Length: 142
Image 1 (cartoon, rainbow, N blue to C red):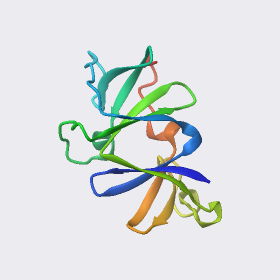
Image 2: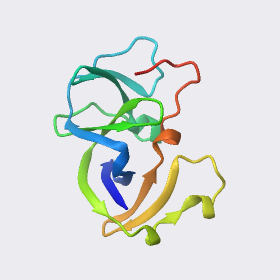
Image 3: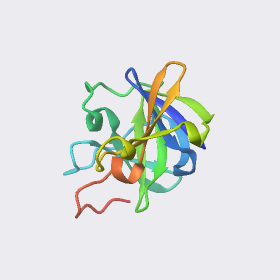
């Protein structure tokens, strides 16, 4: 299983590689009036307007200003694209699917975390993008 590993604060996360469209350096984000509080605004990605999710706010971590070394991971949910603002991306990892611990086997449903993998630097949570980014039902994004 191919995973893109990224970091927010001192925490490690991963996304299934097929959900990742591209990774870009931080760019200017245009604020979006009346957006949910965890949406920083929007960016233009090759002519397509993409909302930017403040991952720190979504995860309950202390907020900070975006820095030039930060990254935006452009991902695709089943409904629309979303950019995740993260501290850094460490790369693509080919991880044996047999070694992933599925959280549905040990915790009730409803979490955005699909599973957990072991990395040299600690545990990484594999996020399910459709659960991780579930905006308000009437939101028209993308």
